[in-house]
Length: 185
Image 1 (cartoon, one colour):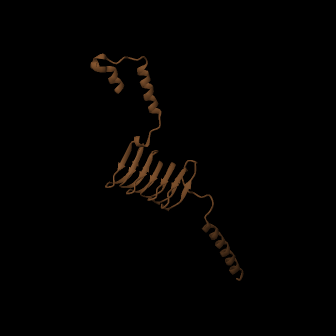
Image 2 (image 1 turned 135 degrees about the vertical axis):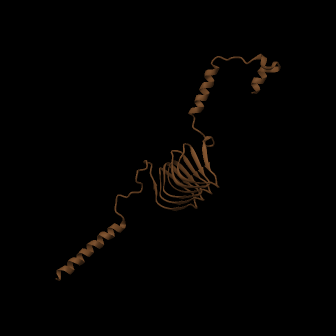
Image 3 (image 1 turned 135 degrees about the horizontal axis):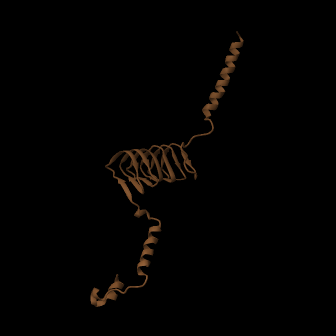
């Protein structure tokens, strides 16, 4: 701005600004370059559910959602979910990224990263490509961290649980007892 004022001098705007060749094209290139640059966190469009708000239902968003209030239902987005210290989420969550400082009750599936900060309380299963857990976090649930995309049925085990092995052994022993009892007839 000061360069423009110096060029104008004391004559004011009547002197005009010289027209440099290619000036308009240069400006367009700068704008195009800016459009292709990654968006800084502060430039993201963020939707906020404030501490005094309660929301129930199904929620979809594009960029970023911050929950400082209460939400119950289902959240589905490729964006970033932030649960603040005063936030309470009771939902099935499918998002790109999640940062938790408050309380989440429900299963959380992320395409990329889950970050649980020191004040976070997580009650449900977690599935993500990356997971960060700070000291002091409370988690009750299963964690599955894999760089592969989440499957439709997370945490499904291919092998039988330990109780199934015991049940099979008990059934076998019971059949032997039954066979021993029937031979006495």
